[in-house]
Length: 134
Ligand SMILES: [Zn+2]
Picture 1 (cartoon, rainbow, N blue to C red):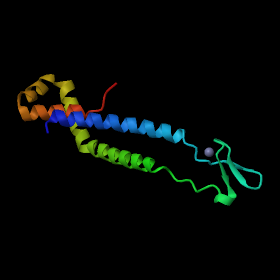
Picture 2 (picture 1 turned 180 degrees about the horizontal axis):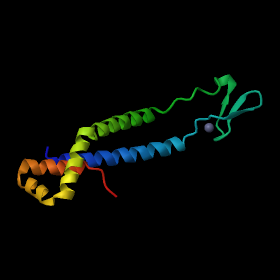
Picture 3 (picture 1 turned 180 degrees about the vertical axis):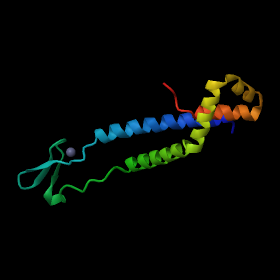
């Protein structure tokens, strides 16, 4: 796999993670967990928020369980975050800072490094990892 393909996959991964996070947040917000209820007569327990009701003689209100899709989404996001933090390890950060320093002090050094293929790929890889500056 080429560096370009890896970079593209990284970008797609980040986009997927952001989209999944947004969908999860929206789904959590729009799902009533029936946290507050009131009694309706002798038989019913009724949700204050959504109005869903449960009859005592049919087992009453079941214990809340998060949908299994939330668990899958959270597990995938946790794995993604861990990968990202490994990717952002201090050694890599140090190297990125080094390239920053070289670039700001002596742009011609960077140009010289770009003349050799391996060094050029290293510089590109480091610059791609660098967080966006505002
Ligand atoms: Zn409810």
